[in-house]
Length: 87
Image 1: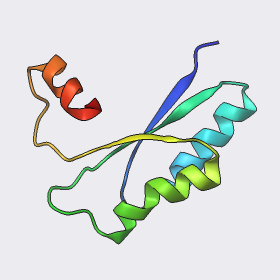
Image 2: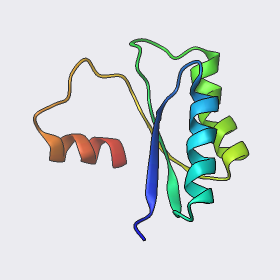
Image 3: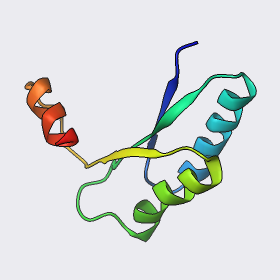
Image 4: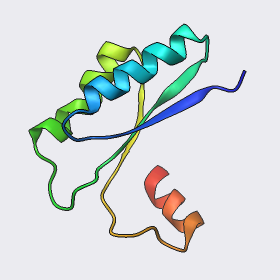
């Protein structure tokens, strides 16, 4: 009975993977809180990476909770990182 958060990359191929995941969660009766996206490549995201979150949200009927920018490695200050991401 725990709701799911789907985490996906922003890059090419994620629409198919994400929509299949959402479909199976819905089919299994698992509530979906929303989507979180990871930018896996450094630098400015290309048009695919910029548009995929909105496309998946619209087609999968799930809100985008956030997009995490690329980081070379996770920080050790998890609390500070969480505050930075959520404001």
